[in-house]
Amino acid sequence: QLQLVESGGGLVQAGGSLSLSCTAPGRTFTNYDMGWFRQAPGKGREFVAAISWSGARTDFADSVKGRFTISRDNAKNTVYLQMNSLKPEDTAVYYCAACFGIGRRLATTVTEYNYWGQGTQVTVSS
View 1 (cartoon, one colour):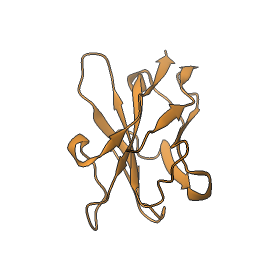
View 2 (cartoon, one colour):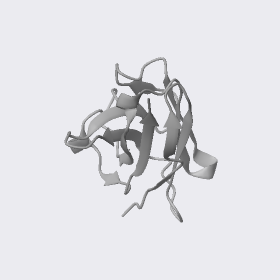
View 3 (cartoon, one colour):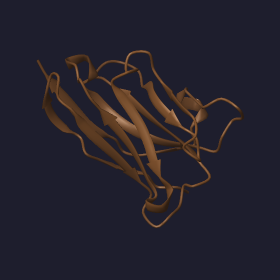
View 4 (cartoon, helix red, strand yellow):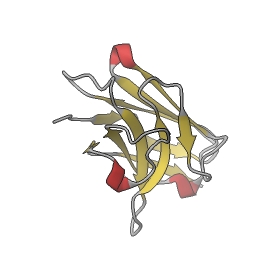
């Protein structure tokens, strides 16, 4: 079992930035592809970004391309989501997730991920 813990959420004005982190206390997730999802009130959980186990490959939802970046430091067992130019529609609970890996492409759907964190709230005010 892999426990994931997110941090870094908060309240920010539109146009601002936030950086989220995800760690796995006491465990290594070097062998996992990692992803970030978000869920706004009344909506389903949606894909935001993913990164391969080595960090060589990344993928982003169209809605965040050019504004968000994903990175990882395997030595620190940490995955990051840097969010810039935030918009009110980015308001959601953000979840970190780990995937065993599905081949050449990165997983982008909820069912493809094996472990989830509890989430961290991001609120963007207008």
